[in-house]
Amino acid sequence: MTGTTRSAATTYVLVGLGVVAIVVAALHLGLPDPDVSIRNHHIQHAFFVLGGALLGVALARGRARPAAGAGHGANAWLLPAIAAPLAIMFAMWPSTYEYIEERPLLHVAEHGVFIVLAAITTFAGWRFSRGTGWLLGGMATAMAWAAAFGFGVTPPLVTLPASTLAVASPTATSPAGASPAGAQPVDGATVYQNCVPCHQAQGTGLPGAFPPLAGHLPQLLAAPGGREYVEHVLLYGLQGSIAVAGRTYDGVMPAWGHLGDDELAAVLDYVAGSWGNALPAGQQPVTAAEFAAARVKQLTPQEVHALRQGLDLP
Ligand code: HEC
Image (cartoon, rainbow, N blue to C red; front, side):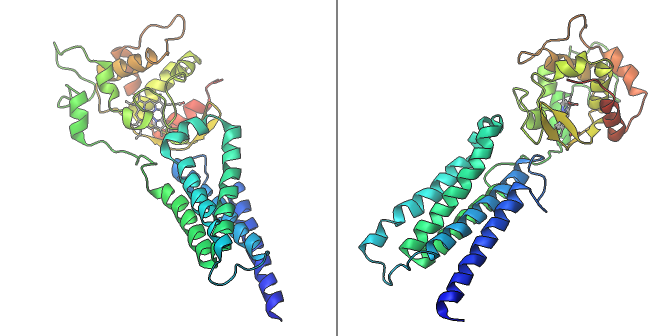
């Protein structure tokens, strides 16, 4: 094999690897389902970036080698080589998630942009000097990978310490379900603080991780049997794959049965009347008595999920 054919073979191998990385990302072969959590989604992004980076190097190799000691012309390549990975980083900035998640077409386009920007990074880097191409490509991929586990993306599945519950629960020391006579009326907004880490202060949830309650709870309440279902979710938790607004969630909702019936009723009524939500026509606010009745069932989170499967939801 001559030096030239060996080098051409390497280029084809790079193209092959790049295509494989992009196919793996696009079909998420062997990758965790990107729709389940933001973390999984960033892992998918990392493969898009890796694929683009490899293609960029292959493309640069297919052209004339940069002269040793990089002449004047080569310096100009440094600018795109540095600007492109910066652009990747800004596109992955956490504050863009919600906007992009809500626009599926933009989201697919974003994946294409990652590939192109990564290719520009390594192509331009390689034109400056080979080492720069590999270095910047590796950095862009590492950054995308780090985004899955680093810069403030996935709120951990929070198990709230007992002290947090005590704030929201004036009855925390009395047996579950009971309230001391003459207790202050419970404030639903205060109890809702327990839900904020996951469902967020405005009930928007986090796409792919925690379902929204704003715009969604009334749908659940309006379905026949839906009101009882929601009471069961609060009392016993929920586990199993569900679809909300076209998105799949497969997480675990913790049980809140240790809160009093009056607190559970208060938080549900708070959510049912906040952020544009309203009780379905003809329904009265949920009462503590309803929770007391639902408590006798003793369901598992999986059984609650089975109840949901039986609901007629939009
Ligand atoms: C630790 C995170 C977390 C907390 C805290 C939490 N939830 Fe959830 N909630 C979830 C997850 C995850 C799901 C979806 C579970 C699944 O995929 O099966 C869910 C589902 C729900 C559902 C059912 C949605 C549906 O479409 O069936 C309701 C209602 C709900 N939560 C209300 C609440 C309320 C009210 C609170 C506060 C008392 C609360 N959640 C606290 C994570 C949480």
